[in-house]
Length: 185
View (cartoon, one colour):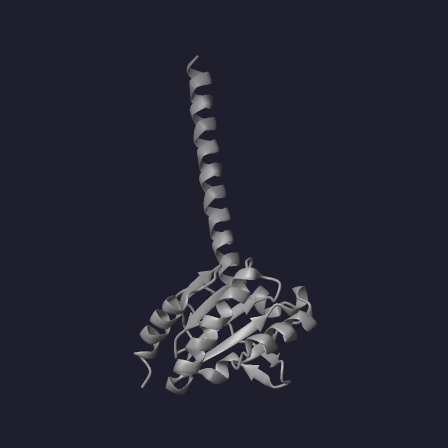
């Protein structure tokens, strides 16, 4: 009986050690892979840089806008909340662009009808840059799973707020932009 208890205790200790080792190993490996795979598209992290062609054919790179407050808005013309927030975005752009504010409206062109996109932009008379994410690379880099998704980026290129869904109101946009512009010289 004493030998059975000793074997049971030894077996229990062995199982606990193996379990603890397994937990430590999987936690460590998961943490490492998360750090390597994530481009940090969340608040407090550097905004992933990208370069896309605008609807006018100009190549625009996010990092070229350092020193400005930037709203990166991922959208599609078939998305009702995306369409609904564009007039407010245009109004805020017109009001603050001379103060160091820019909008990069990144159209999810890989999931959109380009003719509908151009028609919508024309009807809304949008004057901020509209960029075409033809292969979905920016949506992927920013880990966008829902449209619209907006990233408020400070002059140092740090994401200060992420807004998933919409439509964003003019009041929300004005409040966020004014708050970020306070840090611009």
